[in-house]
Image (tube, rainbow, N blue to C red):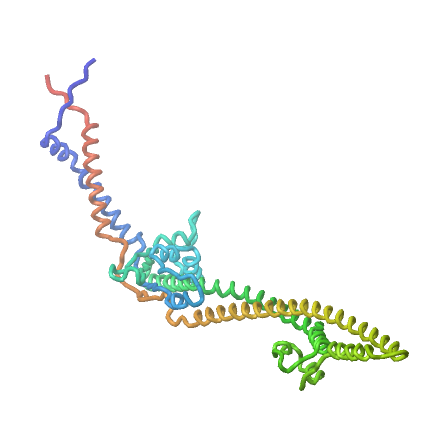
Length: 397
């Protein structure tokens, strides 16, 4: 079986078909046009737009303090970062909740079906970068546009949105300072405890040490000369200095016994009989006393050396704790001053939104023209379908 050859339609044939079925060419555009007018004037909710502009500058105070207190610098917030903040749930939900609380939340922004009202509202929120090329790198400008059923609501929502964005942006930019303050506060509490503990240990050491007494005793045993270095007595408390009455040379108990022993030995060399026996006993007594003093001096030297090591260690620990505490305190104080000295916040509303009474939707003319065009296209299609379904005329024999 062979297919019948297809007939190609000429322009004249097309015009004849459209002429025969011209009713479709006007009835469908008419119906679509009337429907578009009804939708544009009676069904479609009017939409108005309002725009607020926000500006974000670098945080200058933090940059000034960076080298002095070692706070990591904060780079300029990018537009993408600002956009993420603006469209975050925290900021947008704040706008939605405020409008709902004030009873100004329109019906189309309320929860309906499976679509939350917040998501419906976000469809009519848009953010656009407005930063001039010559200012890129120095600040970020962005316009926040809101479309709403009436001009006043659009302006109110845009201003609420801009205020929320500015507040959240300033918090984000100042968070490094606040975080550093919190960290330093915790470190300061720990350093304060260490400092107080070091002070208490130093106090207990001073109360329990025998260093002053031992030094006074060894000076008494060894002797003291005004020509010796003053460093030997600088660590003696004033009480023991007065006790020893160091106003003149003090020969010391050991030297006194040695002199007495030499005197006895000298006399012993010439003594006879009972005198010699008495001097011998005296010499033995002096020798025994001198040996006791030598042992006592060795014991005192060992004990003084250990006590001085403890004393120096306690001094070092106390000084280190004090310096650490003061350093952290100064850093935290500088950060607190920096935080309170931010006179101009980095983010601010550059231009608030005002009601604009020119509708942005619906575009009735555009809707009507699109409806006519669609109706005409469907009319042409309907004409060709009707021509295809029209019974063919049988030619007379």
